[in-house]
Length: 262
Image (cartoon, rainbow, N blue to C red):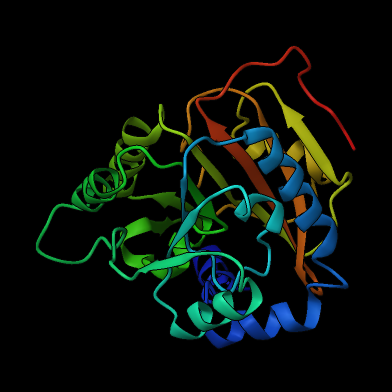
């Protein structure tokens, strides 16, 4: 069996580029459609305001609902992949696209890690921002900065914990929506969706979704948002892998029902 950190890195090294486009082309109709519908419903509930939307990591928009994009006069895509940018224009030709290829997220470089978040917030001070299946990819994109493995347990680095606090403090009161990985397993979960009044830790969430004998991998995306309503949707990204995706927006509001199973 692979060590936990090795397994996690293997799962999250297709955040974009040709491997991801190949997966999308092959599985978006057969395996992705239910998850895409849940994302669209959650985005409709978000109801962001303003003439411009910023999307971080949209790839080619394989999971972007047209119902969201058409609300805005202009959509900014923060997307480094040139093929993804070309596909976005082709697939959503009636949308006014602007592209931003700046790197706001890398922990590597002369500046403090938090400086990228500050630049992002300053460049787009009023626009709603949608982090599209992006924040859960950090453990593959920046492995050395995100986690270390001790006695078979994967734990986040102090630098990453500090970055998450900075993210929460910077965007916690902005119009922000995120869909990101919380857990991954090689067996299907017991239910297809959850609605939670507050965030569950990884162990608690795993207990809601899988039997105790199932090995569940944690990409360390807890505590990105303040407590409040969030959905857990299941995305079978490819055969043999089920991702528990958190759909959450801020400012978040509490709900009376602790859990809703769809």
